[in-house]
Length: 149
Image 1 (cartoon, rainbow, N blue to C red):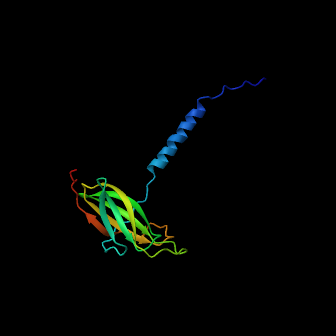
Image 2: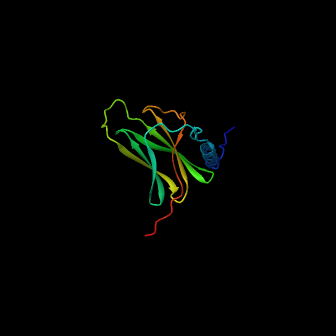
Image 3: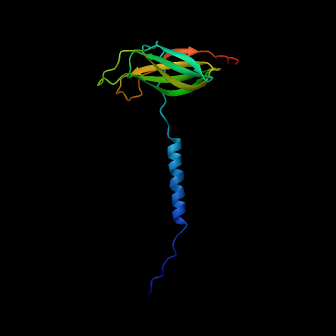
């Protein structure tokens, strides 16, 4: 008895592709991102942190004691009537020598100057990749009125 060929299932490949795409999007989209650990009430022990305004937004400024320090904005979260900006200051790489001169590090907050802000900071060693050390209150600023031109 001769074999009859089955018709190709042309609709099966696009359907399977669509199913895999939807599953991938759901897995990626529903994955939780780990936010910063809860802040500590203890005072910040690190380089001086201040807040400036530029282009109608708050800017965090850190006076690092030497070159080699880096600043990272970890998160910005809306709290009761203010924005909390979490930053990490990373110490210089100990394998290198750096000039002992105060260096200004700046990071944008994306918070309008017309809103209140609190900066929570932490200092971590150069090679520390954990997200476990808590942030500490380092600076705050109320709303700043726009200056007429």
